[in-house]
Amino acid sequence: MNQHETINPSILYYGTPVIILSTLNEDGSTNLSPLSSSWALGDCLVLGIGTQGKAYENLCHYPECVINLPDDSMWGKVEALGRLTGSSPVPEVKKQMGYTFCQDKFRAVGLTSQSSVQVAPDKIAECPLQIEAAVQHIRIPEHTPNMAVVEVKAVKVHAHSHLISDFNKIDPKQWHPLIYNFRHYYGLGERQGENFRA
Image 1 (cartoon, rainbow, N blue to C red):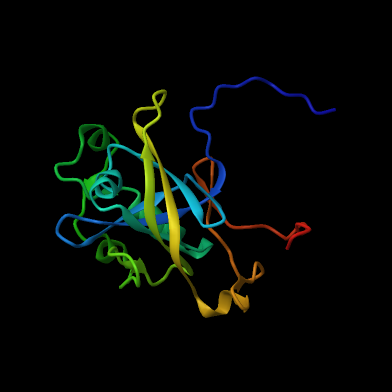
Image 2: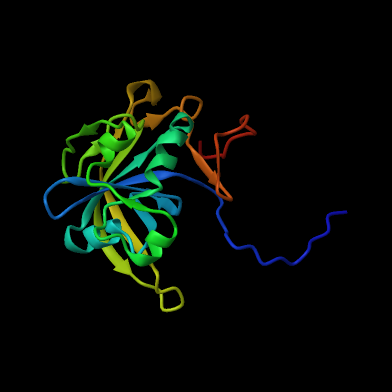
């Protein structure tokens, strides 16, 4: 019999795909921010973003972005990005956590910038899936004022050719998303089955 205990975990990252968000800096360069909080339904995507970071500031001024989805081989680059911030000076709360300022995150972690088709921020060439998106709404919850809920609409989707199985379809056997699971990085295990709509 399964028994449950009531706990009070410090984090609730229960296993979601990692994304690297591209946003536009005031000088026209692209900022990169790893995120672990997002979901998609149709062409609507919802992102959870800290309000102390450069991504939030950029989206408020330039409401478009690229949602770059790394595969599970890219966890080291994601982790390297996680210690960098595009905010200068570094906000005190981030300084205390060990963040350092970096102007060119592409170069710092060995990623390649690609021009986007419909939005200004650059894409990440190494990411197998890239979603160009336009911000529709930004809301700061009253109960959690240090984060923003950002709704975006996908306007252009790009995929590495080896992922495409049929017209406008991604082959799930070829796609290996990077999963953030209670602050640990994982890939997918064996397929267990498929939804009736697959």
